[in-house]
Length: 490
Ligand code: C2O
Ligand code: CU
Ligand code: CU
Image (cartoon, rainbow, N blue to C red; front, side, top):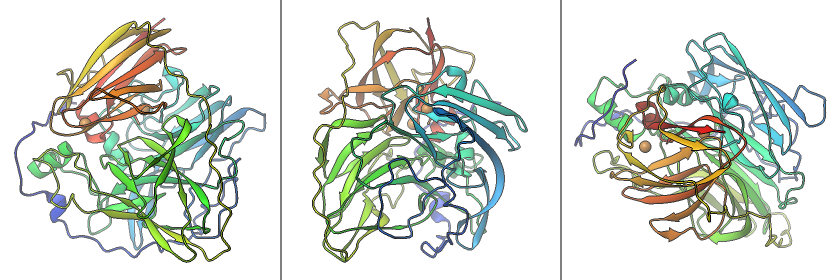
């Protein structure tokens, strides 16, 4: 197959999908009898007030041995009512969108028996996990139609955090994720520092559909389709755990922990809760040392965030909102980009107020990566569809490094559109953005690199040799070849 490179042409009209008839959907009318509550409660479950919050089912562990997790996961085509009243030909993990949530604990030995019942090759990539390269589900290890593969890994101590899984085949990731293949993966610590604060998972995604309910993918043969793919395909239906505008109940004064994954192909969320500050407690690779208060949080593609929200006055209402964020180039900016969108409704109950809870000021240790001895300093240049002026070649190694060394990578975006950088297999620390030191320590595997921006990261390579992908996580860009291969030798 030829890799198509899309030149960034100036074209302001004919954004096919914007012209499409907007579908009107009844809000949140999906019945709960779809087998969604079949999972065991999370190990740190704490009672939430009663509401209709959509909870993706938890994937059942079929092993009875302590510390051993064995799971069955199948990707197959299925018909699902993704939007009420319009059955969609979806592709789903175990028949659901999002796929079932995988709940694991630090130290677990995990085997996932995966079967591909799609008509095309796929993989399952465990985004953000530190695992053997052969279990990473990278495009180098496709699972052919009808075939199965076991993914085997052991979770390291300290790996508690929010991750997710999605297909990662060569050049067809956008289509597979857009048709419904994505799910959450949570790693829990032996004892959670925020134990006692009730928690919710929010898998954010967007999608768009043709009037007959089919997933509307860009037509690469047309100029509008090309521009759409260049921009990164965005949808006009905002999904949270597969539902639109769900409503969460919170008691007056109560704190709830939101664990959020940006599983959208291209949409960047700028999250805020009008009327309150967010208590930002964690990123991709888990909790920080201490909480920080912020007005809003930018969540680029594949990034995760954890923050606490607080219940307001009895009977009051607010929302989780995404504010406009200009990630676009002038040529691809949608005409309606300045629209804020409410994602969920936050309803304070009329219960007696909950006594104010003190958030622990010391959550866990995040040790800074030691950068006194650095084996390599590299510059990774992002231009439109390319990394260091090349498109992805599965047979090429772009960067060679060694295990048990530390490297500093400077990722430079030289074009007028944001590109979120992601590295497989290893959590890194952001040193600075445009020379401004990162104000707090955290573990990350994805970081947004804004238009004409520079981000420096430090990464320590340990345990797992082999070939690792790094790429832009706007899925259309990844498919176009905005990806490279890092090979780690012993
Ligand atoms: Cu979430 Cu290489 O991907
Ligand atoms: Cu990844
Ligand atoms: Cu990109």
